[in-house]
Image (cartoon, rainbow, N blue to C red):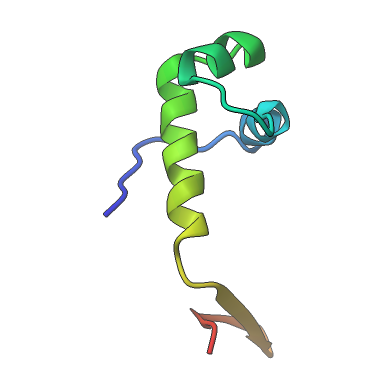
Length: 72
């Protein structure tokens, strides 16, 4: 199970995604190139991999309620 403590900075997340190249790059190189702390880069990369390996979710709005479920 993936656990993250604290809040996620969406702008930082988007910036990190913009720096990920098509070729291999170490966490340290990615950290230096993006200017983001190495531990933060590692956590966000782990989160991205976890999300990519998870089932997709669907949102359904009924009136004022929003329901979340796994895709069929």
